[in-house]
Image (cartoon, rainbow, N blue to C red; front, side, top):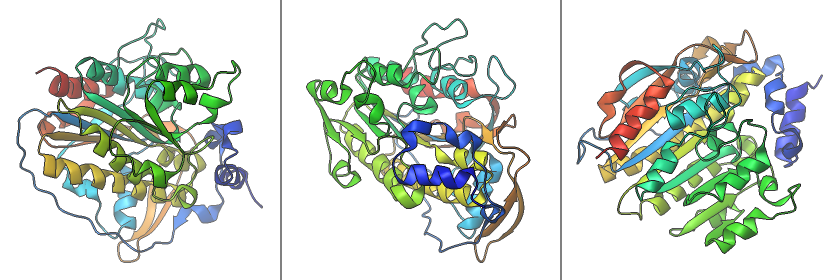
Length: 384
């Protein structure tokens, strides 16, 4: 019997997910989805640990939505014992609670990471009084740095939205899309074209962005050809779909964004979200989690490729929260098999890992609050 996850996969695959943007929260997996049988491994490079400066010129901030320690270890096991994350020698833990709840949602979790302020669940870039708070992306813009956002969800979804928008409710997708035009962001790539073009107010924000000098692309093959200027890449009407559908969209988009942003001599700030690790946790699907964890780790590899050569780039990897209470109940490093179980389909309150590589990475060890992750990045990148 097909359950709700099958319907979700269908919607994602055929680009109809705009009508059920948050359906993943109620997804359920068949028992067969709880075991990832294994596959071929990809090669993991080892990068040098010496850098040009004590403070970074650039920050690449990678958020694995819903990624706890179990999700990381599922990726390590599935890739036969190694991930690009192995290169991170400075590791800490983030307490993810919001101002309103012991268990955060992605909106409040994202806002804590983007602003250094805890707020209520559902809030996008506003405090508990619903007043806008400047984000690290906006502060970087004010300093003349280039900025970018990349995601496998709609670009208006909670985590990317919390870095650029200021709205009292995460479900205000059209208002969030409008907020993009109030900034000077250089690059944003993800799903969510419908929130820019099929709007209740009749506006076509893509045309307005073009008038502001942005290049607009929908096909990932065209997106990866862009080397300079301002870029809007909206690859789907809704979310970017599961890995089978979107393929290497996230690593390619990350590399494209880095190529464009690195043209700025003052530096850049880039946030990349691996959105669907969380969705696999909501569904209780080990297959979903592992395929997106490995995809996200390849993004980590793209960031490290640049940072190791550049020598002035800090790479920080963390999560907004853990999802599903994932418990690994079996595995095999030889085959890459991972078996897991899930006590619930929602977020949990446990601490999540924080990984750092590059100038200033030593700041990110130990136990910290989610707001401290932001404050450490801002201190290193913006206070020079």
